Amino acid sequence: MNPIVYIDRLDLKPDGRQFDAAAHAIELGPAVHAARAVFIKPNLTYPYYKKGVTTRAESVEEIVKMLLRINRKLKIFVGEGEGGYNSFSMSKAMSDMGFDDIAVRHSNVEIVNLSSIPTKSIEIKTQKGPYRLDLPEMFFKEVDFSISVPLPKIHCITKVTLSYKNQWGCLPDVMRLKNHYMFSHLISNIASLLKFKYAFLDGKYGLDVNGPMDGDPVEVNWFVASNSLGAFDMVVSEMMGFDWKQVRHLKTSAKYGDMPNRETVQIIGDINLLKRKFTLRRSIWNYPALAGFQSKNLTQLFYFSRWAKFLHDVMYTFRERPIQ
Image (cartoon, rainbow, N blue to C red; front, side, top):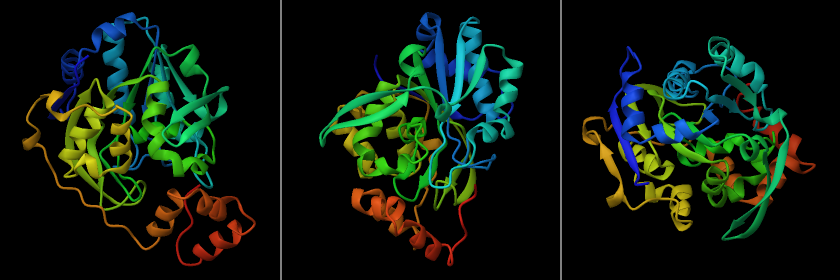
C-alpha cells in the first residue's frame, strides 16, 4: 500500500465526517471490514488528563465510532502500559481520563492495562544483535491491526514523540527504561510486531519547549491520519519544524526500511497552511536523563545499583519528585 497522509484543520465540532473522510483517504475501510479485533493506543504518560501531554478520550471515541460505522461487529481494545520510575496505576488513570466511559457507551470496546495481562517473550533482530522483550500476548492472538493515537509533542530525550514513540508504552514492564539504550533499534520493530499500521493524531493540543510531561501546551488544531507510521512521523515532524533525519529513532528506523521515501508519500491537504514551529529547550536535569537513556551502564547505575536510591534522593532535594 502506498503511504498516504491526510491533513486538515481539526473540526472542533466533529460529526464524524472528518474521521470518515480520513478513513476513506488512507484506505482504512477494507482492513476494518476484514478485521475481527483492532487495538487503539493513546499516549497516556500522566495519571490524569493534561493538555498537550495525554491523548484526549473524546479523540479516541471518535475513532471508535468511525471504526464501528465501517464494521459494527468489530472488537476494539483501547490500552496502555504502566512504565517509568515510580509508575502510577494505569487502570486508574484510564478510568479518571474517561476511557472506561467509552466502554460503557460502546459494548464492543474493552479497556486494557497492558501491564496486567499475559505476555510473550519475543526475540527481536537488531543491527546490534538479537534482543529479547516481553510483549503483550493479545497482540499475537487477538489483534488484527493496531492504531497509534499520539499528540504532537516535544520530548526532552527523543526530540519528538509521535506515532512510533507512542508504542514504547506497549512494553508492559514497569521498569521498561532498562531498555532505553536500545530504544532506537527497537521502536519500529515493536510497532511492526504489534501490527501498528495506522495513525491518527490527537492534534487539538501539542506540547512545546519540553516534554513529554513538562512543557508548554499549545492549541494547534491539527488533524492528521496515515496508513504508514513512518510517513506520519515524517510529515508531522515537518509540520512541527523538525527534519525527521535529525530525530535519532526515525533515522535508525530508516536503516530498518521502516521510513518511506519522502517522494513516495501522498499528502492529501496543504501542509504549509498548518505548520507551526516547535522548539526543544532542555533543562539542566534533562542532560543526565539523556546520558542515561543512551547508556546501559548509566541506566544500571541510576536505577538498579545500590547507589540508585541515594542518587535520586540527592536529585530530588533540588527538584520536585515525579507525580505518582
